[in-house]
Length: 190
Length: 190
Image 1 (cartoon, chains in turn orange, purple):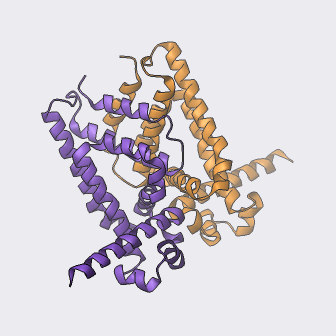
Image 2 (image 1 turned 180 degrees about the vertical axis):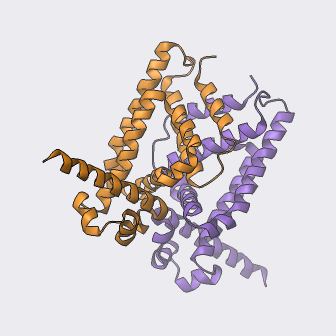
Image 3 (image 1 turned 135 degrees about the horizontal axis):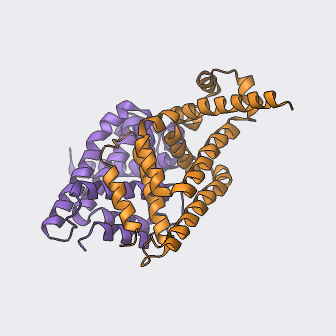
C-alpha cells in the first residue's frame, strides 16, 4: 500500500477514535447509537465501519488506545505523576472523554463477562508497568521498605481508581493536589 | 392508619427496595426495565408503583437508603472502618447490590444533571459525617496535625471511591487489607 494512502487511513482512524471517544463518554456504550457516532465523527456509518468491524470493536479500540498511553506514562513517570497530570488537565481530559471511557470500561467489566475477558490483558499491562516502575524506585532507594511493594502498588492503583471516579463524576479538583502529596509521601522512604 | 397495616406497608417497601437494588446493580438504570423489576421483586408493576411514583423515584429511594446507612456508619466508626467492612462483606455487598448502586449513581451524576442536583444533598450529608468524625479524632489527639483535616478527609473519600470502583468491577479483595492499614497510618498521628 502506498505511503500516502496509509497515512490517510491512519489519520481517518484517529479521527474516528476521537469522535467515538467523546460519544461513548457522553452517552455510555448502549447510548452511543450509530446515528450519534455518525454525528460525533462527522462520518457516515459506512466510513466508520470500514475501519472498525462493529461498535464493540470501536469501543475496545478507544479503550485500548487509552490503556496504551497510560502504560507509557506509568513506565516513564509513575502512577502518582499520571494522577497529577490528570488534575492539571482535568477539563481537557473530560473533554477528550478519557474519564468517561474509564468509567464505561468499569461498568462493562461488571455487566459483560466477554468484555471483561478481553480487557484483562490490558489491565495486566498497566499493572506490570506500575510494578516495574516501583521495582526501579526501590532499587534507587526512594521507596519505603517496611511495606511490601505489592501493597504500595495496590494502594496507588486504588487511589487512581478513586481519582477516575472523582473526576468522571464532575466533582471539583481544586483541593486534590495536597491529597496527591499525601499519597506520594505515603509510599516514600522516610 | 392501623399499626399492623403500616408495618405491612413498610415490609413491602423494604422488599421492593431489596429487589430493585439487585436489579439496578445488575442491569444499570436503563437496563432495569419494568419487567425485570417485576421479576426481581416478585411483584406486579401495579404493586411496585403503588409504593414508588416511578422508576426514577425507586432508584433514588435505593440510593438514598444506602447513603443514609453510610452516614450512620461513618459517624460511629469512620470512613476507614466503612472500607474495612466493605472488604469483609465484599461478596455479600456485591450480592445486595450496594456497589452496583454506587457505580450507577456515579454514572448518572455524569450523564443526568437533574439527578446530580437531587443527589447533591445526600453527598453533602456523608461529607459532613466524615468531617465531624475527623474533628472528634483531632480533638482526641489521634489525627496527624501537619496536614489540614480537609486534606485528610479528601484523601479518605478518594480511597473510598477507589474501593467502590475496585469492588464494583469484580476485582479481588484478597490483598486489600494491608492497603487499608497503610491508608489508616497515613492519617494518624505518628
